[in-house]
Length: 206
Image (cartoon, rainbow, N blue to C red; front, side, top):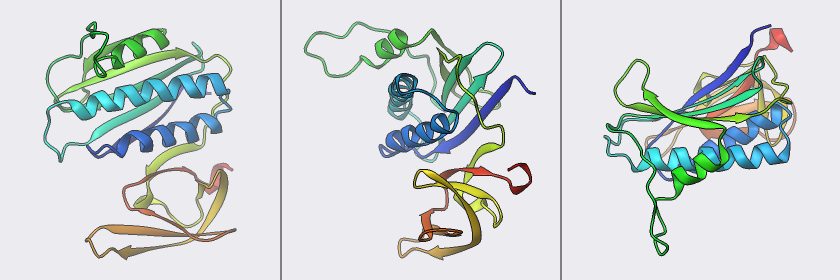
């Protein structure tokens, strides 16, 4: 039984990526039987890390990388957010009337430890946070992939439950984007942007 379980996905450099990262984290941790306190803390930390990454000066076509990892050996949840910007984020003490600059203070207050590392395999950096999570029970077969890569026969987490994918088709939007339509074993089809991260399980391991 592997000691480390992780889920990774990428997000565009847009404000909507903050709630998308939070929703993906919530789905993963709920599937790992996380309690409400850990869910709330992890969502706060990841929101701040993604928000900071969006503020970094970098080309708009560069995506933000998110990794959610759990070490069963140490009972540790690790959240990582990677960006293509240079420099290192630093704690600073904002003035009382400032509304920005408090993100890393929140991360430091809620984390067991946090830090910054060079971005693996590319330019930029990874800002990470570790939280104590001894009671998690991750579903080992679960992983995150883009909606466009989902195949019939796999299960996806949809509307709070697991559904088997019966068929997959794509539709071209008027704007030029691509929508994936997943026909499920129960309920209406699931329509999501092609790049949207979805939690999936392969049929052989259910």
